[in-house]
Image (cartoon, rainbow, N blue to C red; front, top):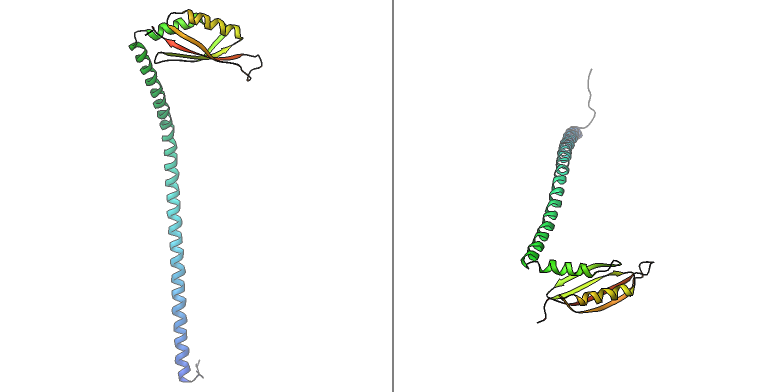
Length: 181
């Protein structure tokens, strides 16, 4: 077979150069596509390995959170117990004075009266609570004033507790404790 080129020589060189450029561009494009495909595969592989590693670390972290939470609860309980020990040491340091005051207070508290808050601090008594009626509160005050450690005990507040249907009375009493100075 005979190949006859009918193009002028200038155009032949130009056409040959264009073919070479197209071949180079196609080769470069093919290498770029293969490179991007390989890079994408490497990124996917790295993401899979990292995902597995992350899942393992999250499982390990979840396993560590349970003991850490238990440790936190133990520390809170220890702090509460330390506070109680300090309170007991303070009460023991007073030589039983607080125990005697509480025993005297318990002895004069009527059956239908409940103390909800009690403060024995710096020679002062403040007690608040609930009673079924005003007569019970009055009886409590009379008996409390008759006890030697309690002085100048007065009723600070008495009101009907609207949160209950039974008409329970809320009260607050305060006064001095200890010997007169």
